[in-house]
Length: 477
Picture 1 (cartoon, rainbow, N blue to C red):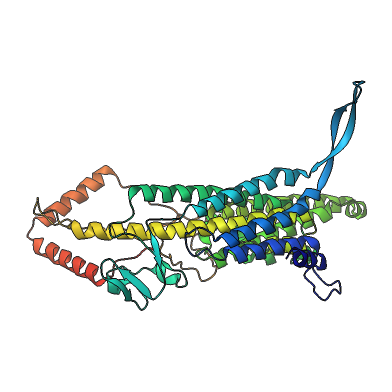
Picture 2 (picture 1 turned 180 degrees about the horizontal axis):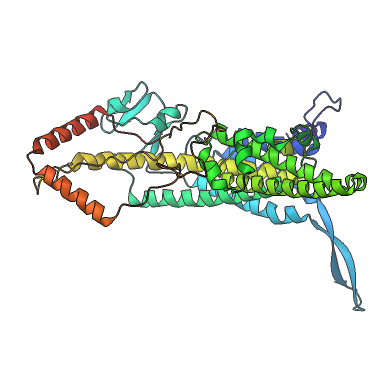
């Protein structure tokens, strides 16, 4: 096995031996990515990793990471003479600074993740394959597309993940100790995810921008961004948050497209500034041309800084954004083996931590739904002590997809910066009403309630309960 891996790395994944394979950096990156996919897959269940797979991951990662032991830099060091005659300074090898800082941290994160996954044994929850739903007391019963036939509420969250097994919890939900332990595991995995993402983003930022990407860029920033975003980014009053509020960022595809356009515009403007500030361009310009060049340089710098700030705001809003086209080009054309090891290792750990959090969230979601269902069966929605009906408020789902009026991420915004905004701007809340207005509305409602319209209230309560039994209440996505 080791001979096979060694030959594949030397040939650059080209088994014909004709020298058309990929470079060493990309070959190691692909080897780490493929090993992670083989061992962990999609991580469908929260259960300990099989012993052969865990041994395979530990053994082959040790092989691949051994390359980093030979990537060194020389640093000065003081040593004593053997006879005590004094000191002398020599250059000693040490792992390169980026590997010296990040590689031990990634190994620690790897060990923490494996230890966390191994703890999911003898759990209070279990899994049921699709097509079979376990009833609380009657054993397995078949199900077509949802669990509603066995008394379980169907959800959009479960129906979208049709390939995953369904987590199940006891009829009264998870015990407090099990729920607390599950939440602690989620918090730990979230910290591992943040650390892996930080290392990955730092390594990608240090990679050189390939010439292939720069040659593929358009000639102007306007053609990169489109007319709408370009007009707003070149305005005198510019706010990244207001511009992002105008864009359709409801889907990951639209958000990634906006990020790719902004990133391309940043490098277009930076290239313009570099060309105008080069010595050859300065020597050929007349006095008038130099003055115009200074104005153009300042404008390009301002626009690139604005676009950079806009991209940072977009990443803060969407921290789980996939890799942009620039990131993929950097990974594909990178020649530095050390950077390739750090990037691929942090990326697979980030994926493993993200999938672990997703599986924990699935169990927590089922536990919340089970406890809410058990509580609704024992507690009535009416307060019988006062004799007045109390309407049970159904809060809107925080996971529902909010449809926007824009057909594309570059649709024309519906507000203008020079006119007052009527209605709610996306992402902004209305100011809270005053105390006097609330008191007046409350008095009006009380007068209407005791004016002989109790019959309508009871009718509305009956309709509400019928609608609840019919299953029309909103579900969390």
